[in-house]
Image (tube, rainbow, N blue to C red):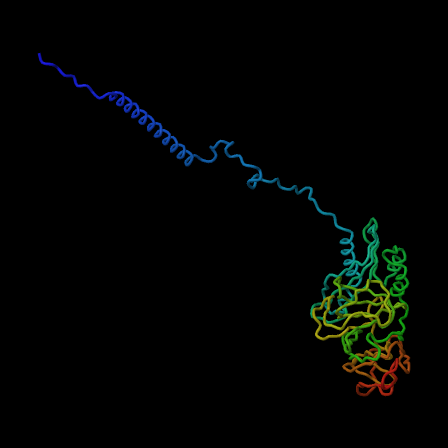
Length: 404
């Protein structure tokens, strides 16, 4: 009987097959899991892309308060109870001064300026007490632009009561009454007498006892300007106080600028305009004859724009305004202002506008004329041409030649 042979496999072959089959099954299962996971992820992405933001969970959209600007509407302010800052006493005072100035002086100033409408007054507060119930200052009505004139200006004193600020302008009885009641912190005792005389109606002496407003022995050019005003320029350009007085600066609070008012002990006032580098001494300070006031210039800080010619505009007056310079004596000369000309006279010598005028100092003109207080504007000057030299007149304080 033939022998039957059974083929035997290699040892371990069935086990490997089982392991291989098991590994394949696992890979297939893992692949399925991956496919499912990728499918779910893609589905989530698609869902986020198409889902509107409002459907997101509110927790997922929370951000810190500072992360962005809030879009919540703000409540509108109530119109029934507006919150306004209180108006300061200084602002109230300024408005009151403007009202009083325009009410009391606008008619005359419109005539002087030749205009129908005036600009708002420039009000400066010089002093106010701690209780804010008393004040002292200056006011100026600006000239129209393009007009080179001496600005209309004055001083004021004010008291605040339950009815508001009571304002009095210099030149009125009310000014003197309030002046006497004002505390020393507002009107110092040294200023009261001269301010009372300034505001009074006493006759103004024609022999002023003043020198011309520049250095003694210098000759400056006399210039014709507007009514009641003379212009001077020349020498070193330094404008000096023609006599002792209390100084006040008007219309500008900027250092080195403004209209200068000098009130002399007899109540007479001299004014200086178109100055540059104005002295910085405090308002109300006492200045002496020869003290520096400023320099001739073209600036007009109170209005009117730039002046066409360098000079100092000089005027004499009191609290009611400037006066005609006709027959006023200062610097050894008698100034004359007529409808036809502006000139100066001394000892029979006449100097017309446009010629140099020598400052002899605080001496009277000789011989002393005897004019009336209100000379007629139609009065004509003495015949004769202009003179630029004064022969054989001794110079004050001596000179190398002894005479001019």
